[in-house]
Length: 196
Image (tube, rainbow, N blue to C red; front, side, top):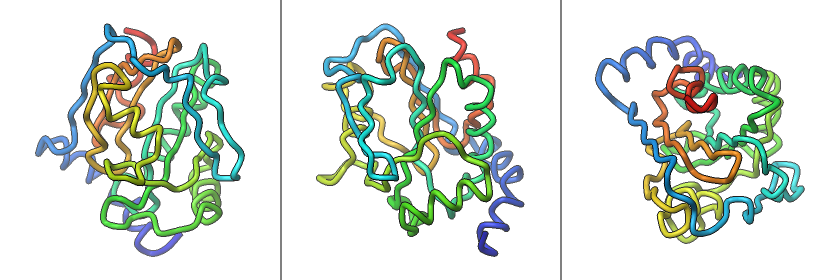
């Protein structure tokens, strides 16, 4: 872990308190009524190992998709995501999508990112190949689906920063969007996973 990463990890609790107090990156959006126009389970992506991940394999589980970065004030959420994954492993899949889209906070290679996550946070949930998650011609197809109402049925909200979160139901419906300052272990996220 670099000095910058150690500093970011140390100030994470204060950062979360400040952003909540200021109302920064705390938006949540819920819609469990609208079915997608393009089936979620028809999508594919690549794991950071280069192996394809066919989303049809995810049927019957909720999926939490998070765009991640190793040098961000929210990076400590890897720890929270791993706790969440351990708590709900039988019913939830977490997919991390590393991206360098916000202030170039993910410059590492896929191998560097995987090693960083495993050594520093014990991450065992799947990480994808580093890609673009914001709207532009190179945008990852999964994030094209997540941020396009013509595909997912209702949501056009792209990630506001690293560690934005999208929750998909067992049936492949996009049900929730959570801004980065909404912790993965917050009551909002856990209640959505439990279906409350």
